[in-house]
Length: 319
Image (cartoon, rainbow, N blue to C red; front, side, top):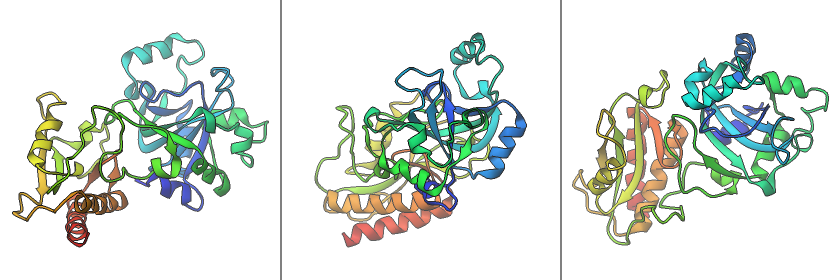
């Protein structure tokens, strides 16, 4: 799946624009089309990982109308609307005459970012080449691809990653420049949330946790291959595994230590400088060759994990 920054920098960009009545991916985890033909056209003309920029429709809140309010990253997984929204949200959709039976041909969203109010732009300014003032209905019904200069305007905005229905949870995020937010997470804890785990200074080990169970079921993506993993560094990787498992119910999905320098019998890195360097190298390879699931979580196949692990140990040793 193409990464967000690669989608923006591609030629032509793998970035589209459409209208939504609002922006809440936690209850509306898809981009919908009225007909399967329109959906097939979108899939044919885009690549998995496509970014869809969301402008507020004329039916949106007054302060959101025609404003760029969010960005979605789509897989090429398809289904129907009710597959990608809570049952209560689907009931609300079907009880509303405007949305009843509409936009049912769904393409799944896997990541999402909201745009800060102070960096929103009117669609005519953001999509100055694509939006003509007369093609709003076309953009709203089937979307339109953006030009190179339009796609790069995303990088001038402040974004904050937000939760998507049936995707790994997102917490403790803040608005920041898009060029930073759309990258994989930086090594080491960055959230200011008081519940965020922070490593103490001192000797540490780099590690990879792997989630047991079938990734396709966990991600609701039958095409998912490989392992869902978490990259990090810690004084005690087994303690981190235990801490993460305390936040999920007992069942088929549990975190296990897949790799750690401690398990390999290596001497601990002297401190966080080496730990962060190792983690950064690990994340760089996973982001390049795997699929980012937000922050330090990835979907990757065994060969990619091995390459990332080798790079991590080398970077830590050389830091």
